[in-house]
Image (cartoon, rainbow, N blue to C red):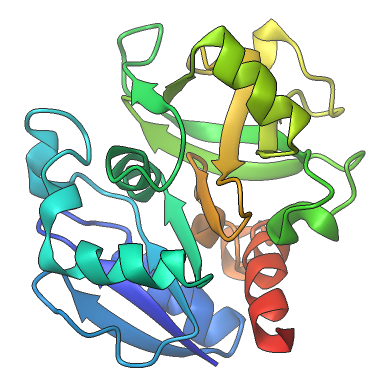
Amino acid sequence: MKIGVVTFPGSNCNMDMVHALKNELGYVVVELWHKDSDLQGVDAVILPGGFSYGDYLRSGAIARFSNIMEEVVKFAGNGGKVLGICNGFQILCEAGLLPGTLMHNESKKFICKNVHVVPVSRTASITANLDPKAPLKIPIAHGEGNYFLPDAELEALEANGQVIFRYSDEQGTVNSAANPNGSKNNIAGVCNDNKNVFGMMPHPERACSDDLGNTDGINILRGLLEVVELA
């Protein structure tokens, strides 16, 4: 299993992801640079968090035009598994690989804290084997995580099982008090219609180690990657 982790100028979670994949999950990691035009035969691609190109214009709007993204779009179009975390989620939305957009947090403040999420979709590989009644504690760190989609499109997204995570409280109850950024329907992550491209604002790679006192993120990454391995 080879997992590609893309670094853009301004990425700052790439090595967190590399460490989690190598040391906690035992995968082979290929570090990809934004100017690359070859995915080097990887089995899945991960776009990590950070502030690509300083988040100028809009978060992810410039990174979307990097050389590597042409290959990521082709890879996804051929059914390849792609996961975007935080800024990576924003990039995937800007590239049209995921529906919706990430707006400024309702509070207009950067938020960095642990939150709880519950897995939703039973047909998306990343959440299919997760217990929908067992909330996961996963860190967030973003200023633009407010997920928005027009109501008609949101209804279709929900009906098609494309919501993969919702913000919840510690008991797993989805309510407005547990929504850190104002996202529609407490949405913390979504996938595309073909369910091979995934995006989420919380950082599972920061919850993969006993040393950090939290391993809830391991099953999220494993849920994506083991399905690739078996495909």
